Amino acid sequence: MRQKQRVIRIILLVGTVTSLFFVPWPLVKAWLTPLPDTVQEQVEEAIGFGFDGMIVYVNQKGKAPAFYAAGWKNRADKIPADPHSLFKIASVGKLYDAVAITKLVHDRRLSLEKTLADYFPELVGRIENAEQITLRMMVKHRSGIPNLTDTPNFWTNPPKSSKEALERVLDLPASFEPDADYEYSNTNYLLISELIQKVTARSKFRYIKNEILSPLGLKNTFGSIHEVNMDDVMSGYYVGIEEDIKAVDYGSMLATAEDVGIFLRALNDGSVFEPGEQDIYSSIYVYEHTGLVAGYQTIAKYHQDIDTVVIQFVNTTDFDGFTWSLSEIAYNRIVKIVRNERNA
Image 1 (cartoon, helix red, strand yellow):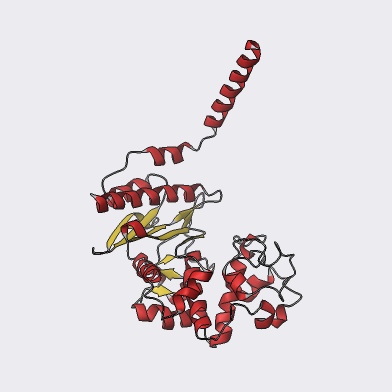
Image 2 (spheres, rainbow, N blue to C red):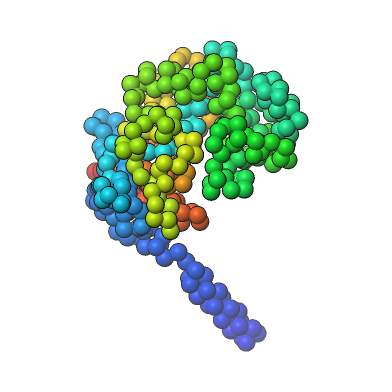
């Protein structure tokens, strides 16, 4: 018995040593490093994690908005990070899409219970279960429609149009039966974008600008890189690739951290909605989001306990998600500093 226990202890020790060998120590170091006193110090420290540049915006009730930046806006030209730069916000744009759907549903121009077949009859037989998939399911990522960004070569050879993007998922089998599960799928929001354009007879972004951005006074949010001066855009970098990839178009909206922060506060306090709209929105989507596209990662959240919006932009990504984990650690540390300052 003693010999058996000894063997078990040796096995456990070897297993522990082996697991420690594979621990991502930079993540542990980033997590365990003593928390600095200020957000600016934390942003500067985060650059040491391996990020090229970082922007943070803090919108705290009762205080003037605060802007922080470190690292590079453009690494090659040695241009320092500018907290007012435009940034590709990727999937954070789904918050704006969901608000747009909410407004159109409230105005009875769309119905959450109508199906994909109702709105796009030409897709019957090309997208499985089109007759059962409702608009509500698409907004909530419960449609079962395969995710277009998971199709082969999407990131190395991005589609040049919405039509080409959709073609990459046509005739693929469903991931699951409608409303039977949840799977994040960018195809849902490609179809939602097309639907907004179809029902309003104008581009989705034009509708968002008129109904959401302009009432909030937001002038630094754009539909794509084709609508901006590229010198105003923060460069984007992929680990292991030297070149700046900001000119590659993956279809992302762009905005300053301040514009995203103002929108997010309006979303959470309800001021973006007309009477009757917020209940619709709450039934279909979330009130915070993250965004990730090659060269750009965004975290946009409202923290109710301190009545504070914190937006973080990082212009460095990689293939295995390591930089995303570092970004989350940095974000959580920043929120902790803000919370400490609030409660001091």
